[in-house]
Image 1 (spheres, rainbow, N blue to C red):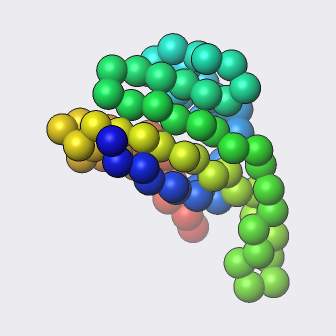
Image 2: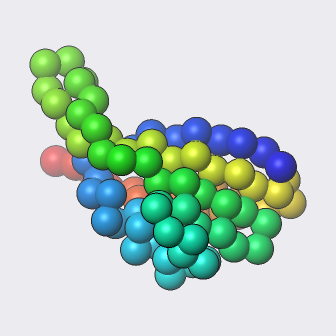
Length: 84
């Protein structure tokens, strides 16, 4: 199984909890599981980008190699935002 750590800025923790609960089984305490994958949604923390603080969330993801590309692409698209 592959282990990947991803950090997302400017999202609420609740958004990730909802996304993964729709996708798999909620094991409680921010842990989710599905066919070939497991995710732990960390707590929100502040991440400085220059002088600006942003909310950030760390995801610990374990994936079977066969599904890793599709899983990560779906995650990327689901949390893609444009700025202006």
